[in-house]
Image (cartoon, rainbow, N blue to C red; front, side, top):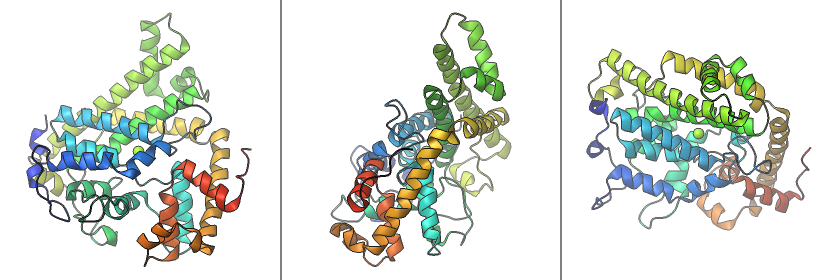
Length: 376
Ligand code: MG
């Protein structure tokens, strides 16, 4: 459908350190494979998405969430005729910079950095991981990913003007990323809204009827399911409706992007870059339903007492551990201190904590500060 806007892999701006071509994998396929083999990618398995493990073994973690985003984004790229390898590489890497304990962890690290006039941003941290902290090659630091993958990471959440984020100035500020990269944030949103609905239902935070009452888009789907499957259990009805909801949102992203590209009249990947707005978009009704879902999840899941109590506990522990390492830099592993040499102390501590899995954070806290405060 949009083959003309596909980013041509042979026009990639290439790698920071030039490498010979592979005999049968192109540059974006190699990037995807490098990401899958990275340590930071494997650590996603032990990082919280929304629900901390311990309540159930069925909830998403950041790795299974990442696989769901990749599956959605690849489907959309394939239907639109875009580069599936670039899309998949970007989806697989999109959460690699997340610290332990999800957004609460990110906010707390940022709060700690603000004390020093600095900040923590998970997208910028992700770039530091793939450029610096992953050490797998003898000839260069990091994974030496192509420009387009690094650019897509830099622009995951938003585009920026020249000079607005000085450390990202090499990534074509003022221009749009390739359409493949534009799909990731929207696929992420579809994946987490529907997954959090699923996990929240499993955690008995609400019923399917409540969703239908408060999310009009879901109500239409749920009503059809009730007529289609009158004998189904509440759980079966919920899952039937959830599947149809994912399908409708993904279709909304495909249609919305086709419509916006047609209105813009862009004809090539170069024109995608130059267009003043992003072209990847949901149809207005799919976008409205995402907003409804988000506010439902905010009320019933994200602010639920069980998640809130966990959040407060981990924020307090993170602040304590941050302070501990600032005061006792000698307790950081020697190898890590060598890698981080020359950075200001607060940055060294921030990077160290940001790389931790939830499990490693708990063990480190236990080792340095004694037994964790109990679950309230
Ligand atoms: Mg994500």
